[in-house]
Image (cartoon, rainbow, N blue to C red; front, top):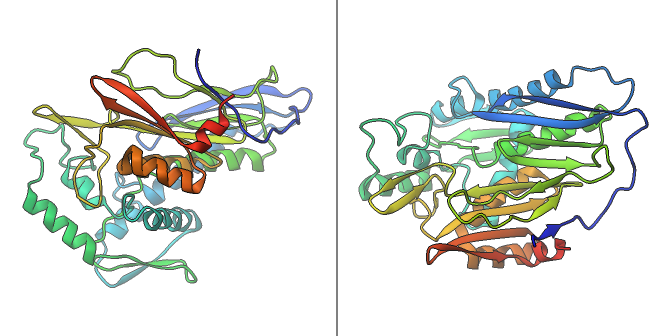
Length: 334
């Protein structure tokens, strides 16, 4: 029998009579996106095109793969230069820096140099010929540069200082933010019942045509047992999962995951196979699932319990997986 998670608050409003179920999909951020929505009568907008434009805006600002993006231009900018930030970029950066502070550095949006060193950036990839994992000296130098290159965010002026050598990477928060922007776009158009998704991260509101919530099975670990995973009613909730199986390479008997500990410079080695977070906003779930993965089950559960975060860890042990959940996760169980 599988676990079932449901929200504490239920919105009883049903879709307007005559609403039609519509689907939209596309590609963005190196992955796919999709939306299922109950569109009220009289709304004839091209929803797919509008949703795609929202994601295109995020890519143009925050992609570390696009050389012309604002983030890439900031990373290449000379020391001492100030950069005006559009509202979306400012919102994501401000939030990410707060998570960095809250987690005492377990999460870091300025860890792009480490990401690149380990071959998980846009160039010199780990799966390209000639790649070699960085040695101790290269990692020490990257950590020293990060300690010195501290961006300054002028919140009142909504601008960011490039101190010289700071490398932003929003890959652990931009997808979640994209999901939230899709949700806000639909709500602004009067669509209140939907399920939106970018690369497997989801947010739902309202109900399906049959009056049921948007039930979603929580992502399991692909190479583990086929035990049924919990399901969650995404009714005013969002969900994101970080996993060591998403992107990694093997060196000897060691799995080197794309999830790096910015405090040490190394890929995580705490046995965490996946961490799932359920929250009201997908940006929150996205960033915290990464941060908790780095922190590991003990420190991660303590952090989650202190802040009311609904989190679930699957930890590799003795050839299997052990589950650890926070108090807020248990409170969602029915």
